[in-house]
Length: 271
Image (tube, rainbow, N blue to C red; front, side, top):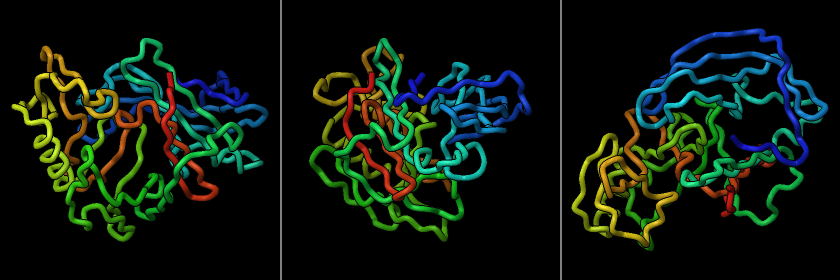
C-alpha cells in the first residue's frame, strides 16, 4: 500500500453514503467491486462524497486477483480527487511504485508541490475531450535496446477527434500497444533475444530464462512454467488505447503536474 508523504494525513468517517456493487471490464480482465462514497479528510481539508472502489474479485491476467482498494486520480468529475479550497497543491502529485520482487511492498504518494523532484524530464499532458479522465502523452518512438523500432506514425499519433493516442495508467498491470505497434516491438525483441519462443497464457513471447542481462523489473515477467520469462507487454484489444502501465513503472517517480499540464518520469528506488 503506498504511503502518503509530506505530512498529508487521511482518515475515513464511519458513515457510508453510498454502497454499489458493479462489474467492470478492463483491458482483458473483469472484476467485481463495491463503489463506496464517503467523506475523506486530507490534512485540514475535508472532501465530502468522495467515491472509491473496493475490489471483491477479479479474473483475467491484467489485474491482481486478491481483494484491494482503488484510489482513482482521474481528471474527470467521477472517481477523482476533488479540489480543496486552495486547489493548487491537489493538482500536483506523484507516486513511486516498488518492485514486484520487493519483500517490503510499499511505495509512496506525494501530494502538492512540496518535496517533488526538481530535476525531472517532463513531456506535455494532452487532453482528449472524448475521454477527459485519462492522462494522454505524445508517444513519438520506441527503442528496443539501442534500436529504434520502425513504426507508422499514424499508429502513435494523438488524435482527440478519434480518441486515439497513448495513456499513462497506474491501474492496469501489463502495458499494451495497438496491434501494429506491439507486433513491431515484439518482432525486434525476438530478433535480438533469438528464442525459441512459446505462448503462455496472454503472453506470446516467452522463453527459457538465460538472458541475465535483461532487466526483469520493467521488461520481463516470470511464469509458473519453470525457468521461463515472458515479454511483459501485449497487443491492445480493438478500440482500446495504447497504455503505459504499472509493470513498466516500477522504481520510477511519476509526477503529474496538471497546473502546467505536464508529466515527468525519473528513476527512484521506491521500496
